[in-house]
Length: 95
Image (cartoon, rainbow, N blue to C red):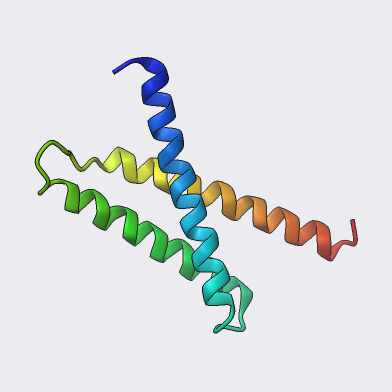
C-alpha cells in the first residue's frame, strides 16, 4: 500500500465517523434537551459503533480489525465535535 493510499484511507475513516457523529448529534438533539449530554452521547455512540465495526471485521475474510482505525475514527469524531463547540461559542458571543 502506498503512502497516499494509506493517507486517503485514514482520512476516509475520520470523515465517515465525523459524519456519523453529526447525524447522531442532530437525531438525538430532537429528543434530549441538555446540549452537553447530546454532544457526549453522540460521541459515545459513534465510538462504540467504530469499535464494533472493527471487531466485526476480524470475522470477515480478507479484512482485519485494528484498534488504530478506531483511533482514527475517534480523531474524526473529536475534530467535528471541537468545530461544533467552536461555532456554538462564536454564535453565543454574537460573532
